[in-house]
Image (cartoon, rainbow, N blue to C red; front, top):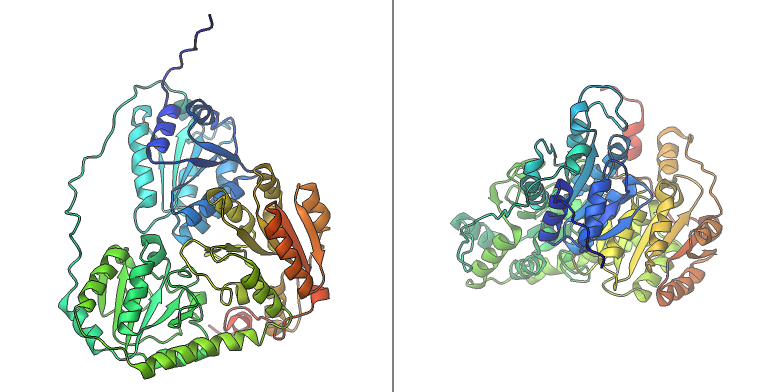
Length: 561
């Protein structure tokens, strides 16, 4: 009779145990000689699905996309040195977007740390490299503390403001035999009906305001506060501007939703007359505020989980630091006890601004207006739209394609190209029953094109819309405006259809807007990995070329500092 082989309990087992205890169901990465014990422990445990990427950069993006779409912790496992370095750029994106990701990486054997002896995969200072790319980076220094450090790292990644935490474990520690320890955090829970007390000054400011504006960021979505934000807006009659990360915090067909149009001149003019700004979990990024030229009223209530967010970019008269959902709930309760009546004339101005900025943008699209309307007509309301950094995504995918709920709008907050494909894969892994659509350009797409095989291997019904103009379109336009010439922006595109088919995708190249809509319907019905390649030369140009963020061309012209 065959007996089951006894397996000693190791650091790798402790790592997996804490992942399972934290509710982790999926991990992304590449197996290596510097993480093999962890992979073997995952196999033996059997509770975590392993998604095998084709590169460490893509693996981090997948964990990132998974976390954004599901609201859960994203987990990625990489190797040491070069492997960790390959992950760094994508970790920067997770940091910029405030995404809870746990990055598990190996390290050289502990006796060789910092010696420079040439141990395989050695890096001069891996911990510092990871710390520069993450919210925090830590190293396991005693095998017996594996469970403790895992719990601490997971908590830190999830704690507001969320972000990636890198935990490196020397390879000899991973297989070190340790005792299985029961480790629980004992907390004194507050009463369930306890709510934040809103200062009386806030009530006075809200009651006095006649032209309020709410600026909603990712903090609304991260805290699950979209219902509370919408109710607040309706109670006080506020216009709602969203950052790109804040899309979905209020349904974008709501008549008070201005949306991601803060930097538009019409919005700036409107903001000059506002008498109150309530910002909720928003970073006020430079590219979304015309480098902080969007005017804000003197009275500014800043709501954020991060103490350092207050006064970081715009002066605040009142700072409320804490969970956005709890704070907004208390504000709504307070306001519902008052007899507030939003001014109908102001709400009409809000509706007019909403229509004006959308009309202005639509007039620039040319044939791509049919693309937009086709996507809105064909795709389900809860479609997750992932946008790589490309002209069509930036111009209308991030503004005119309507988002109705949190977790269904994903973009590259840090602005790095090429991360869209693996991020979309992660989102689809986390939301198998939803439609996930990626908008990408040919230049950025090639950065992580190999991850198409990962999507095919997992049989994901991902739809890729690839806008092919054989180059970096937005940079062409900026260079033309700044210098009257172009350099290093033209690219030789592969035959994307053949490439996609070789990667086990259904693929087609379209030459008109009407073709696009028909092919999108087919892709949606097929529920297979699909790519629609848009021949932009044949479809034609936009009615007005996109010149990048406001002031981009001027910023690159020679000038005295």
